[in-house]
Amino acid sequence: MRNLRRIGVGAGIGVLTLALAAPGAAAHDTYGRATLTGFAALPAATFVSASDPSGSLLGGTPSNGITPPFADQPIQGFSGIVRNGDGTFEVLSDNGYGNKANSADFVLRIQRVAPDYGNHTVDVVGGINLTDPNSFVPFALTRPDRVLTGSDFDVESIQRAKDGTYWIGDEFGPYLLHFDRAGRLLQAPIPLDGVRAPENPAGNPNLNSSKGFEGLAQSPDGRKLYALLEGVVAGDAAGGLRLNEFDIASKTYTGKRWIYQLEDPANAIGDAIAVDDDRFLIIERDNGQGATAKFKRIYLAKKKNNGTLEKTLVADLMNIADPRHLGSTDGTFTFPFQTIEDVVILDDRTLGVVNDNNFPFSSGRTPGQPDNNEFITIRLTDSLHADKRFLK
Image (cartoon, rainbow, N blue to C red; front, side):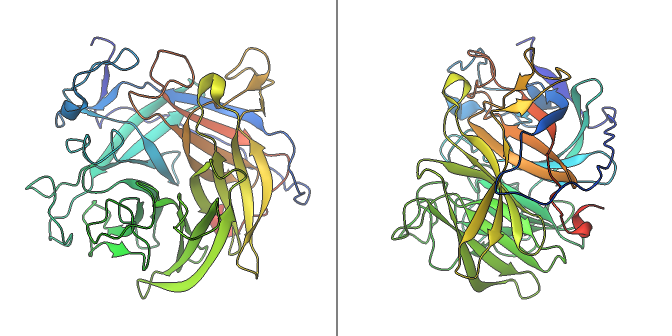
């Protein structure tokens, strides 16, 4: 296991510098080909030093050359991202190893990372565990110390509120979870009325396993959240995903919702963030990786009065121009990962995108090798005309 890299919280911070772009032309039905402007990678086998053991429930079976269990917690599975003002990001490590049964020793955590695009590296500079010290969760937790694990929740999306607290979307309920800045749960998990996954202890599921809140957006004024399901609720049209509006002040759903229609019912969404009051950036993907990856896209989705979302293709992640050969040799960069679950606005024409590497199982970049967590920046051909509050 000499290839395993361990990083403590004291590692140096890389510097991200991105020039603000001038406003571009008005958005079209389809934007042009995006261009790769930055590439950095966190090695797959990166661990939180001096943390708890993990992976004991994986059966000791090697995957992509990695044999569990692990002496420390992997830093992996990034399923949500928040931009800080200093070149660092908060990234959300998700359920762990894929389901409740095998993830009881994976601690749910928000990691703080610093991409250094000049050196193509990523430093882990801190992080917090998610906990429930005040016993707000109404069902039994895995750990008696009430540190939350991948058997308790499948956290897949994150927003930081104006007061510095975190709202996190879960797939097992689906629930909205509200944490303070130290990662302590502030109230009982908030369910979505009428929608239950099989993992929900209330029973009577009408949503497939782990198909809850994959995307979570926040309105520019910080008053509303928009939680996007990854799966179709039983009885809804094939490929139609519900986007649900939530009022932060009252901590209740408003009853307003819109439908995001997948290009193919077999596709899934990876993330959803707001651009302004009416538009969202949404990652839509197929389930392929490597040679079988064909459809990995980012859409701009606009609310319509009829309860649907109108889609504009913003970037094809399988066809990114790379004239500087930052990540390719032939001038075309692809992002051929099974799961791509992080998008963030860096300026009005630049997005940050990160894959979920499903450590140690995914091998989309190189067959037989576990995927790294790759951090890329892409420049769009047109301006997003985003709300200025998202550009600060």
